[in-house]
Image (tube, rainbow, N blue to C red):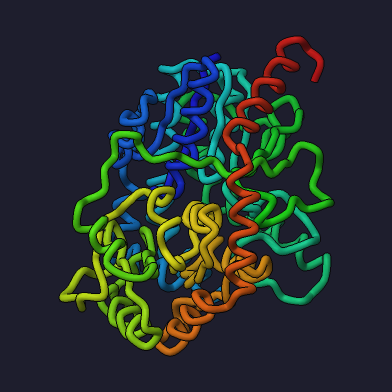
Length: 431
């Protein structure tokens, strides 16, 4: 079976799909991944076929304008303001991404398309090629439930009606932002008007599109009112390369004292990483803990550091996290899962999007203190959270317990098995 995976975004939006692609390839399928060219080497280094997508979104996120936009999306009003500013620029980027994905699909001629919801036009591509599609989100933002609002919107105590409304609102925004570029793409490629039945959850024949969520139900249980086509499969994790070796300075630093605190904010840099660095350094000093800074793309600013703190560009989380006392990060789905899988107490300092959701979930399962939104981040608050995470026996026990359960999960394998069964049923006409 030929499978095309379409994804877009930061490293955290690409790595899980590479992990899933490797699992599908190990099961005997031919897998191609279409994503921003920035990640071409990452895809091919893991033995998968890469298909081109432009770097427009990556460049926008890395620009000062993009960083300012991310900072502005820490409130509902800020999100609306950012959207009003960026939508005119995002539209052309979406149109080009859709065209790149279409060209990749025409070249691969897949039997199945698996897509990140950021590429909502993937269902149009699948329909044009008359092949099935599977939506593969990394957090619960699209399938309605009354248990919590759509990720990224406030969890106001307004009842079931409000919670269902938030999902309709997310879908409305998606159509508002992406509808124009999608119509343009269909017109340019002579695909005609979009079938009325076609959408995120149904194909052109009105049949349900499966929605396989790539996170663990141990962190956020599957809502009881989801339809049978929506499932939580477990995280799609990527082990580090067997030939990877840590830098000697990192090995020496880890062994030079008691377990340290890891701090990294992924691609969420903001415009003032030096300010965040100063806050973290002071929080580590107040808490009496050694620290390890991840200062890769979008991470903390590397500057003159005290001897109790080491800066690294990056290190595989599955190797590093079991060796630290606690992890402090922005709350991306992948980093959250990695810290909890290692059984480490977790402190989340969210910027926007799904990050506050994961911060609330970590606290709800007892594996970390309450999240500290970036706008409220201070040395005093972070120091208190570090002390709690590294000294509270209840937090340590909860983190270790959830780690044991996560390490027993096989998210990639269970997803591969599900896809194979579903495709087999379609082939035999039993679904």
